[in-house]
Amino acid sequence: MTFQPVFDLKRPIFIAGPCSAETEEQVLATARGLKDQGVDLFRAGIWKPRTRPGAFEGIGTQGLKWLKRVKIETGLPVTTEVANAQHVYDCLKFGIDVLWIGARTTVNPFSVQEIADALEGTDIPVLVKNPVNPDYKLWVGAIERLHKAGLRRVAAIHRGFSSYGDSKYRNVPRWQMAIDLMQEFPDMEVICDISHICGRRDILAETAQKAYDLNFDGLMVEVHPTPDQAWSDAAQQVTPERFGEMTRALIRRAVTTDDPDFLARMENSRSAIDDIDEEIIHLIAQRMHLVKEIGAIKKDKNIAVLQPERFRALREALQKRGEKNELSPEFISMFLEAIHQESINQQEQIINGKAAGKVVAGNLWLGD
Ligand code: PEP
Ligand code: MN
Image 1 (tube, rainbow, N blue to C red):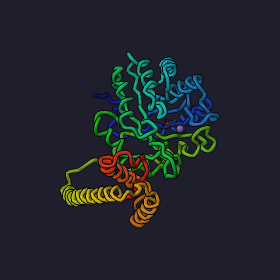
Image 2 (image 1 turned 135 degrees about the horizontal axis):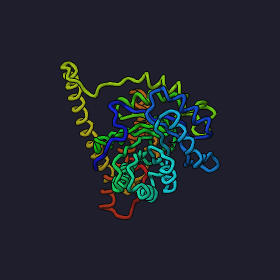
Image 3 (image 1 turned 90 degrees about the horizontal axis):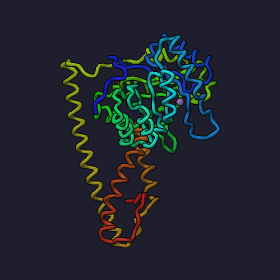
């Protein structure tokens, strides 16, 4: 797939505006506040897909008129979220400049196809948010559907992924997935929606800098004149002034340099990292060897494979060790989960290969 730039700017771009268009005054006040803060595209949600019923579900089509006014008054191009064909037709009628597909829509190929069909024959830019679940192929699939409909000005928005349990983030970033997308489609812009990743304004600035350091092509940020009074996503919105301060403080680092001192130091550290990686793989392979041995012993002695106590103890010990070594609890959980999955696969081969039907490992820890 090849793409044309949506933004075509040689610097990171900024998309900003309220989570939801609430009133004409609120939309215009935000746009006026943002006009001189270096914003490239004004955002506001008109139709709001909410997780639970009863919350504010968007002002609907009348909000499109307000966006049109923003364009006329401030000269800023505007964007809103579309989730079905009717939304697309309404946006085209009102001259919305860019559309975005939300995370709850990207998960549904029927909806994405409906939007793609409605857009056929136009060349309006579309930004595709990642699906709520960390499914790389589903994200690429949505982009593909638009591409097949003839759209070339398509970009992606990374907004993190839903998870169960406590996390620093509202939607955990799993940065690697966005990095993979950048590598697979080098000519497609990838924007970072720091507001929906963070879910809270106190960690927005550090997350924005992180996105800069990972070479995202721009940021999407939710901005509201009185954030605490916002009708949706109040905790993560910031004022236009705060948005300006935060983005001006961002440090743009060059992707690379030909400074020989830098190159030599990088080379040294990178070769040390390569050695460590090799060792890690070797150690994990050794661990798997033991896992298989235990599987064989359990099978031989007719001992139950599931040992949840052992897993609990292991998890606790690893979390403690992680904390001592300044590794985040999120990382330790992910690490353990990956090892766990591979252990299950390896033990299942042994158990099911030689004693079929005895044990159902399911998705539980085998307690190696
Ligand atoms: C939004 O941008 O306001 C929104 C609903 O985002 P997401 O689809 O990422 O949840
Ligand atoms: Mn929002």
